[in-house]
Structure formats: C-alpha cells, structure tokens
Amino acid sequence: MEKKRILYVSQEITPYLPESPISKLSKDLPTLMNEAGHEVRIFMPRFGCINERRHQLHEVIRLSGMNLIINDMDQPLIIKVASIPTSRIQVYFIDNEEYFKRKATLTDDKGELFADNDERSLFFCRGVLETVKKLGWKPDVIHAHGWMTSMLPVYLKKNYADDPIFEESKVVYSLYDNGFNGSLSSDMASKIKLNEGEHCVESISNPDFNSLNKMAMDHSDAITLGSDTVNSELTDYAEEKGLPMLGHLPEEEHQSSYLDFYKDLTVAETLA
Image (cartoon, rainbow, N blue to C red):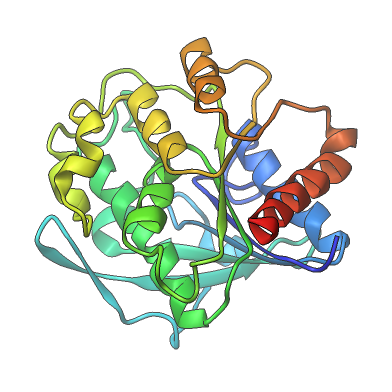
C-alpha cells in the first residue's frame, strides 16, 4: 500500500482518558499505521479532566484564534497538542472554555448527559475540519470513532465535499457499544447549519444514540465495528446500506486487516 494520509478523529484516546474499546483502538490504529509508513494525524476533545501538565499539552498559537458560530454564538477555537509517549505521534486537542473546561467528559456526576452535548459535538467536528484546512493537509482516509464524531461525516459530505482539502477523502465510521440513555437536544438539527438546509438531517429530530450513528453511516463511505458487541439495529442498518464493512477483530489482526481495508477503499475511489 502506497503511503497514505490518515486522519483519526475520536471522542477518547488513551492515555489521556481511561482505557475503553474506543480509546484503545483510537491509539492502537494510528500507531500501527504510523509503523507501516503512513502519515497520521489524530484529533480529540480537550476535556477538562485531562491533566495538561502530566500529558504536556501546549497551545498551538498558529492554529488557534478562529471562531466558530454554534447556535448563533461565536465560540473561540483553541488548539492544543501533545505526543503519545509510546509512539511519539502528535495528538491535536480541540478546546474551548464554554464547552470543555468542566472536569468531566460527556456526563455529570449523576451520570446524566450534559445538556449542551449536541453543541459540544458540533463544535468538535467543525473544529477538526477547520484545523485540518488550516494545516493544509489533505487526508486520503478520515476515520471517526465514537458518537461524538457522528456529525463529522455529515459536515464532510454536505459542507466540505468540494473543498480541495477534503474532496478526495474517504470517510470511515466505527460503531461501538457505548450507548447512552435519552437523547441530545431536540433542536440539534437546527444548529448544524448545513449548506443544503436542515432537511438533510431531519432524521435526527430525536438525536438518540441510534439515530446519531445512523446519520453518520448515511454519510460515510465504509463502516467498521470497534466493539465485539454492537447494537443489532445498527449492524442491520449498516448491512442494509451495502457499504464496505470490517467486523470486530482480534488485536493481532488489526494492522494487516485495516491496511487492506483502507487500501481497498482508496483504490476503489481511484478506479471510479
């Protein structure tokens, strides 16, 4: 496989957050692809519970300073960076005082979803794309992990499809069993601000776990299973879509299987 540029976007990555199927795979895959000779970039939110001193995060001034409008409010975008100790791969952190200062990730101390998780997700996804544009780095493959990244494929296909940075990018979305009870804000669709209008995301009028993942699959080029157990409603939907799909794999098969999967995806685009 010729050298590719692979962008990984995840809601959690170890060692910055506790180990889970998402955080572990989100660290392991970039490491394996880097070892195989590919160029890798990684993005995650800078949740307030991440210890900046311990992990040596520092702000990247040349990338910070943009403002993103979320729910008609200007929100400053701050970019921080650190290196995974075991691989020395850089991780870019999307930060904002309003959305990520609190000392928690997605739920409060009672286990309830934060009321603004919809806006936090939108800010994170748009922040990643705008930062990659500012880097001038054209990814061949964009691999998103976790429901917080579910709007990334939507933005890519609806608002950034003609952008020279992303016009040839193939989007892979991973399904996990990290479900949640309830739903995000009922007016989330009106906050997304797609070029083609709100009707493009009318299926998330009730943005629960399944509908967010389905929306992501609707705008992705391929699907992978990151957990050994994934909601059957989601796997059935993925099969109905007829997209290339890679099942859950043992760790020893990750490098070879994902290398082949990415290769087939980008080769198919070239032939098309």
